[in-house]
Every structure is written in structure tokens, then in C-alpha cells.
Amino acid sequence: MTSNPRVPTLVLVGHGMVGQRFLEALAERGLTRTHRVVVLCEEPRPAYDRVQLTSYFAGRTPEELSLTDAEFIRDNGIELHLGDPVETIDRVARTVTARSGLSLEYDTLVLATGSYPFVPPVPGKDAEGCFVYRTIEDLLAIEAYAGSRATTGAVVGGGLLGLEAAGALKGLGLTSHIVEFAPRLMPVQIDAGGGAALLRTIEDMGLTVHTGVGTQEILTGADGAVTGMRLSDGSELATDMVVFSAGVRPRDQLARACGLSVGERGGITVDEQCRTVDDPHVFAIGECALAADGRVYGLVAPGYEQAETAAATIARDESAFTGADLSTKLKLLGVDVASFGDAHGATADCLDVVYSDARAGTYKKLVIGRGGELLGGILVGDADAYGTLRAFTGSVPPVSPSSWCSRPVPAAPSSSAPRRCPTRRSSARATTSARARSAAPSPTTPARACRR
Image (spheres, rainbow, N blue to C red):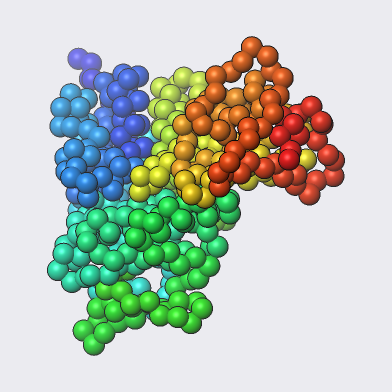
């Protein structure tokens, strides 16, 4: 009498957007039929669309934000444990132990633990009325406190999530402030010109922005609840609640505790197959992983690519994640913001073609290489040309850069000869500025043709 062959066990730690994409990739490759798949998740609900988190305040329910359903889990035989995170990993015994005491042996372990919100280590950061903006549970807590205890709210952080949090507080009826240590909003994605255009638009919406200052202390009353903030310039800001949205850090504590290598600034070190460099039985994907190119990717699209690479590798197919395009197009508080390629002009001998309309709140910058090739750009207020411009990145555009900056988006002509910049009689201006590089651009480049 022959015994049934042992079914290998695959344990997934974390069930966020990237974790769900990994499960889908497993199912697409038939691995849910050949493996026992167990998911251990810290949150009390299955994977949901964290990118659209703020839409909760516009009326979307947590159920509508969900990325999976009971049918997918059931049909693929996935064992999903909610509210039961892994607390220890024993790589020698190949076991994980969850908070509930559940212990599982694994053949393959995939860490998709994501990231955690960074909270500046300032006095009062744990006071009543302080929140982070990361999960549906965070939003529920913010909504409840704003409805009962607050009339004014302040958000620490002027990045993508910080602006969304500030908009959410305003939507809840609070007077809203944004405190950003950098000299401009969204300092990673856009430059000073783009930040100025975004600032004007956001202030016109009724939000107050404080840039170039940091949070020194959270002030509290006799009851221990938030009453204000002391800023690095010595000023004080009265507020009833504080939402920290000052970036995220990789959740790599489990990896550190079991001896897996992590980067100097965090992130579980993996190879091009998303396998940890120390243990061939352990993978890491998403925001917790330090990819082979030395970068931790905070965008969901690279995380999806990593999930697919890990699933392919487990299926013994050839696949590699060597890096990802960081181009992005967003709508923040109704304002289009996009950046692509070498948006900040780090390439030597490049030129900036800039179009700015202060009255309309529009800012467009294209970075042009010495040979006339489009290297990257920043679009604020009007990003209709994003798809077209991104497609031309790395090549010489068929029309002059100033034409791509104008509205409407021009159609590509049959000739690639540069055009003259359009003349405008408004507050809009189109300029080309040379960076302090060693060589001047060719007179035939579109950027040169648009010099005024």
C-alpha cells in the first residue's frame, strides 16, 4: 500500500496588496493546487486597496475597498488567518509561530510584511489625539476622534499620504494644517517650481501649509490630550489632533530577529528572484524587501512585479526583478501631479524646459539631454501629456519640448524638426534653463530652439 506524497507547505506572512497579488500569481500558475498555502495576517480584514484608502472618506466602504473575496480564498484552498501575525521564525526548524500560538512548518516562506509609519521621536507623540494614517482601522479612529473631540487638525508630513490625510481632515469639517520639514511639498516627486504651484492650489482650497519647519513637541492639556504643536522655528500651532504621515519604514523586524540580512537603512536583502540572500527557502516582496538593485520600493507596481517574480521562481520558471520604473501620476486633492524619468535633472549637461502659469496653478518641466532626448519631467496641475511624454522618454521627441508643455497636447508631426516656442500674452511663461554643466547643448536640440 502506497502513501500519498507529502504536499509542500507555503506560508505567506502578510496579506496586503502585494501579498494578495502573490496569491493570485500562485493561483495563475497552479501552485495553489500543488501546495498547502497558509496566510498569517496582522490586520483584522483581508487585503484591501491601500492606494485608495482616502476614498473611504468619500463614501467607499471597507468592503468596497477589498481586493479579494471569500470565493477566491475558498476555491484556491487558501488557509487565511486574520488578526494573527507571525511573531517568531525558526529557520533551522523551518517553523513560524503566530500570536495565537499556532505553529506551522513550512517548505517555503514568503515575507510580505510591508512597512510601518515613521513617527518622529518627539515628546508627546503618544498622547491622546495622535494618530497615524496607514490602515482602515487608523481611518476609523481618526473619524471617531474628529467627530467628538476636534475642530482643528494638523498633519505632520507633506508627501502623498500627508496631503491626502489633510484633505480627509478638511472633509471631516476640521481646520487643517500641513507641517513639512522640507522647503516644499512632495519633495521626493517634484522640484521647487512644482512645489510652489502645488502650494498655491492647496492653499486656495483652504488648507494652511507650513514648510521648512519640523515638529519639536506635541503639547498636551491637563487631561493628556493634544492641544498643540511646538515647531522648530519656536512657534506654536494650536490643534486638537495630530496625524503623523512622515514616511514609512520597511517592516523587517521578523527578518532581523531570525538572522536574515537587512540593509543599512532597512529592508530584507533579496536577490533578483526575490529570494533572501541568506536562506533559499525564504522570500521577501513589497515594501519590506531591499531589492537586488539596492532600493526599497514604496510603490505598489514594483511590489506586484516582485510578487510575480517570487511566484514564478517557486514554480521553477525563469524570472527576475532587477528594478522598476518609478514614474507616477497622482491626483492629490483633485490636483494632477506626475513625474517620470530623470525628473530632477541629475544627468550631466541637461537642460530644463519650464512652463509655469501661476494664475492657473500649472507647472510643467521637461528635462532634455544634450542630444535633444527627453530624460524626464514634472507636471503639476495638468498632466494630460503624461502618457505621451513617458512613452518618448529616452528618445528625441517629434516636436519641441515647449509644444508638449502647451495645451492641448499636440499631435506628433511627420517631421522631427523643432518648432518655435508659442507666444503667450498671459501670466504663463515658458523658459529653458541650462544647468551648471561643463558643456553647452547643441543648437539643434529642441531645448536650445526654445531658449528665449
